[in-house]
Length: 273
Ligand SMILES: [Zn+2]
Image 1 (cartoon, rainbow, N blue to C red):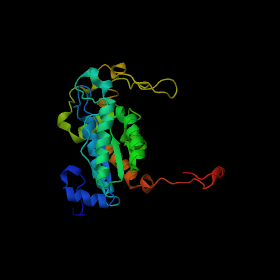
Image 2 (image 1 turned 45 degrees about the vertical axis):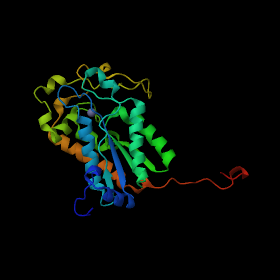
Image 3 (image 1 turned 120 degrees about the vertical axis):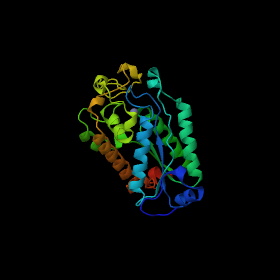
Image 4 (image 1 turned 90 degrees about the vertical axis):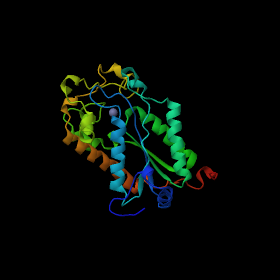
């Protein structure tokens, strides 16, 4: 592939030999991991997939001059069991979801890629991608990093939002990004009526403990937060901030440094094996 101003970063637009060349360059492979699920009455079910793919592609373009990077097609279905009661939702079960991720990552590793970024855009996937990262790293010896843009970019996302501390489901932030990306797919006719309590406490118990809950536990319309606060301009800034954060993660040499071995040679007088 040419290394011109804006090199192609999408795996499925490249040819096999171009991907072999990227493996030889020790490129990062981003696997965007998302969801197809209900996002209230105003947003399409593609929301997490559209946003997550966009952030991954922008991050790759920003990073690739410093660190060659390629983006695999988005994994469009994740763990969305908590959204099933609202309809419109395609979910995998845990075993299948983890198996899909692991098969895709092992494919890239077989082709010689050694730097893998699982780039997630759906809260329900967070623990499972960490599980996959743990297992793949120990199995393959490759460097597997799992990230969720809402967390990686949290510090720069927060000041953009008026109502929310961060990304919430179908609220101010996601509605803003979809207004920026797919305005024709956002029903803005009555956003004020969709405003819901932020629902703090969902997925929490006690002070710092976790409890799974179905989404109707916190909202009657599938929305968390205030979609009426959304603007396309906020959406542009959120996409910039999020892709900047993922690009910074990719370009940070510490992200990919080999694991050190700091063991002393003779602790207790017996060599390590
Ligand atoms: Zn979402």
